[in-house]
Length: 67
Image (cartoon, rainbow, N blue to C red; front, side):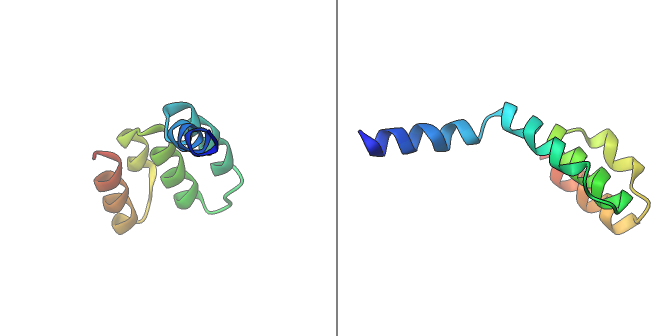
């Protein structure tokens, strides 16, 4: 029974509402590019990646979010 409960918790952690929780953690990041990158990943929104100033970070963001 305990093993099934753990499996259910792990499955619930990988759902979309968890991404919304992760987005809240992004707002405490002081570096603007890092915060934008975090929000783009949390919301799975490649449009947010274009707000990143550093070209290499922007390219990495676009590659990861578009998956």
